[in-house]
Length: 203
Image 1 (cartoon, rainbow, N blue to C red):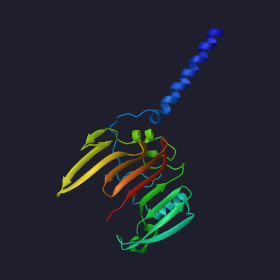
Image 2 (image 1 turned 60 degrees about the vertical axis):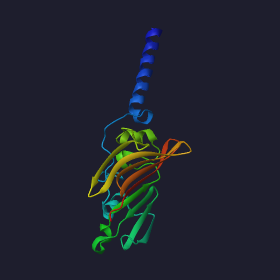
Image 3 (image 1 turned 180 degrees about the horizontal axis):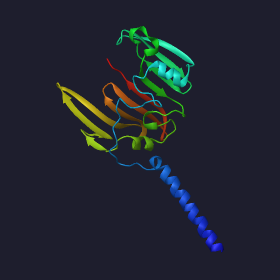
Image 4 (image 1 turned 45 degrees about the horizontal axis):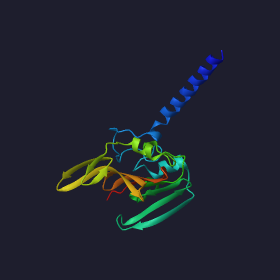
């Protein structure tokens, strides 16, 4: 009887361990994959995307704790920063003087609790980041890429890639570029995401 009881406990223990490993596999292992590379038209803050309107953000998160406006020569107009306890959202100038029609062009997430691109949150493992995007490492021109695509149109080189940046031999950030003006960066400290910044700047 004791032997059966012991075997039952052993089986349950093994089952719990395997279940935990399966549910956390993306934070334990890194898998080569052919998932979609980062692209501009995907959610960057919960279900909000680049070009989502200020009105949509306020409806979802309420009023910010602070705001600031800053003149940008590029736009020849003012952009607006909305500050929340979890981070900051940048808005491009409003079309036709409609303030609520301002659209998101940058998001910074600095606290856990909100999902960034691919559902990644502050506090997640860097391995989860790598497993959430295409991971097909290759070396090009002495540079290591997580993935790399390029094309030339009208004599201009367009690059789409992922890369890991190191500082003192430790991972400092994971960077994905959809175009020269659209990217997302996951700042890493001690193997964990500490900040997420997604950026789209259309001239």
